[in-house]
Image 1: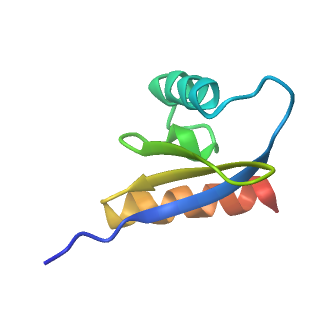
Image 2 (image 1 turned 180 degrees about the horizontal axis):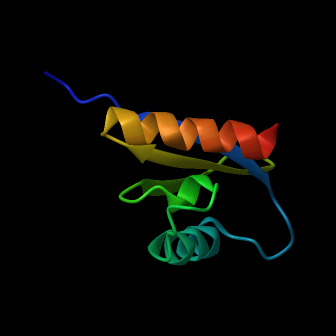
Length: 82
């Protein structure tokens, strides 16, 4: 059975000097400092972060193979965006 990748995907507009590599490094550092009580999607322990160029910005995917963690990532992302 194939694993289903789930979580949240957000778009970050490009800014002068912002690269996918720099953004990824910053997000990885932030995720490493996860505090479960915070409401940021990066604070769900064990998530994976990926960054892809997307025209005028970057697509950031925060995902987990664990269904409950993925749901929590999505809930938090919707709350932040809402």
